Length: 111
Image (cartoon, rainbow, N blue to C red):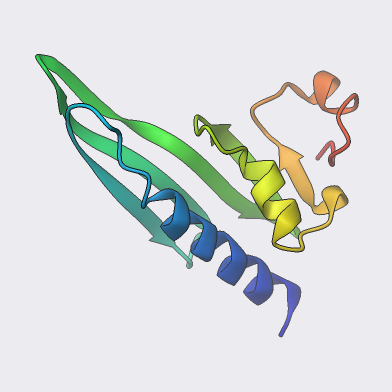
């Protein structure tokens, strides 16, 4: 299996796992978004919490080149840690939610 196929499978599995974490309050649906053609993966919350509309990304991951970019991590279980546990090396994970000048201080890839 080539690296892109392996990364897609790992990320897809994680997205489905994160999509099982339904908020404990409100009438909120959890939607996994899988776009293998464009290597774009998200978990989105949609619904109502009382009178407040809820709609937004909880986890957003892209595969760009040979790296997995965590664009947003609003989960209580860190996505980077889950990727490491799934066998993705640190140098293949980019914390895209940090500015590039900050990424160099993490143990992950800069770009």
